Image (cartoon, rainbow, N blue to C red; front, side, top):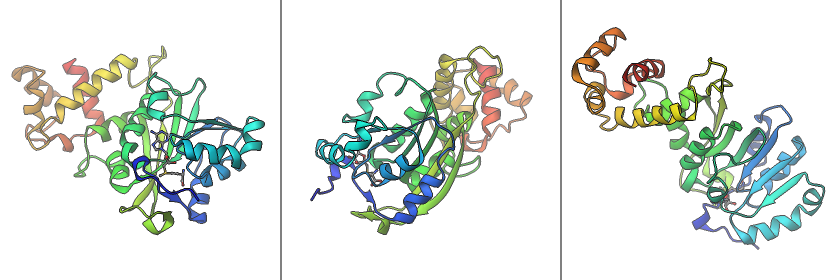
Length: 270
Ligand code: SAM
């Protein structure tokens, strides 16, 4: 019997109806599915019934041995590619996979935020359907004015739509995690990167990275006013003019400004 290892964030999803609901929410096209952390393969088995091919990354060598046996046919006929590696190492390059792909996974919670940020950054990744800790789902999906609206939410809002599909109680896992989980779906906008079309939200990756740095400054002291925070990168007089032009109240805190206004402010400041 394989025991769950805490250090790899192993909580195996055992509830059949939840597994089926995740698979039903998958994008309906024939693009490659990438699964991060197949574990004992319960989700993998269902993914293989619904899509042409899956590439799965698993860090735990004991689980890899188990998966190789359990899915020997699918591996042999190349429907399943099993990569026994730390996903963070495989993702050190800009793209995880050469073709366009979707992620479907019950993520290891200890690196979930990091993995979602990597997926948002990877232009080959078109959508992300993942089980995460509820707080993480809320952080990504929050809207302007929410207490949890942050630099991360604005970045997500600039790149993809977000939907929290449903919550999942700890009793659905073995062993049960100490937190409530949620299934989060992020669908990327087709035009968030310009790539020569002149219609994108960002001209290129460099501009996207500059926007990230801008957001870091805007939220450097979340309880101070946005104007004060931005004083680090723009002159006081210029800021006063930009705020007036864009009709942004001087006393706004960073979480009170909508993403589209952030984009306009960014254009003025850069
Ligand atoms: N997909 C399975 C399920 O739904 O039951 C397992 C999910 S479990 C929450 C997370 C899985 O991710 C485990 O199999 C764990 O070994 C794997 N994992 C943890 N860290 C990883 C990493 N850095 N790279 C690849 N896999 C990782």
